[in-house]
Image 1 (cartoon, helix red, strand yellow):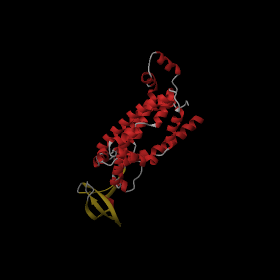
Image 2 (image 1 turned 45 degrees about the horizontal axis):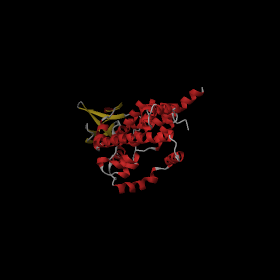
Image 3 (image 1 turned 120 degrees about the horizontal axis):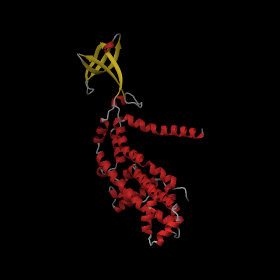
Image 4 (image 1 turned 60 degrees about the horizontal axis):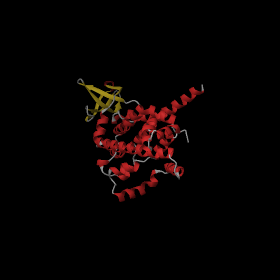
Length: 323
């Protein structure tokens, strides 16, 4: 009974968390006309008011009802008004509702601004950051977990304390530093400051500390140096945590907004989240296009998590518990 109640509560909480994403997805395939009408439900339902004349069905909008007659505006297939205040019998006007998906919203949103370039920039920056994070994180975590040197714990806890410093605190000093280096509005500003990640160091250190000391002793007896021990022993035993670190690093870089917004200005190196922000300003009145752009911007992360969720769960089950 307790387990069932726990699952029910978790399912309800999960549903509330998913609802905004479901609404975003369904709104992305609605017509802008229906959104303007106030159709904010989850189903992309279109309500058609039509009138048939000479075998041709026209979309109409009722304007005024007068007895058994109704004055209507008549529109063509492109929703351009072709006749105004046409008086017809009310019985000749029909209304129906149907579910219609407008996938053309995705194509229109993708071509409205150079999202292809934004995707390429974001992918390049994210992959570069992940590679740097794994290299620096593995080396630092190995040192903190297995090597003994003066001030080791103090330096590690100093690193951990930096996780509590919000980004706006060091944003301006970082801008001044990068400006002196001549890196503003370059890929260097988007990649190099982020190739070291404190959370990755912490996560890998906790995993490395779970490896028995006997394995390190055996590696030293076999003549392995520190780097070879790390490469041939420690990393193969930490695959799940490494995958998780890579995923979190990729997601963090992909979703980064404030840093690239401040450090870059050229559209040629603009990343996806910044491009999405500019697009939202241009298409603020086009909700369906904005939701379509938001959907395909987060879709790669959703797919990545679906395929890598087992590794993430395994890493948390096997690491982070030993101090």
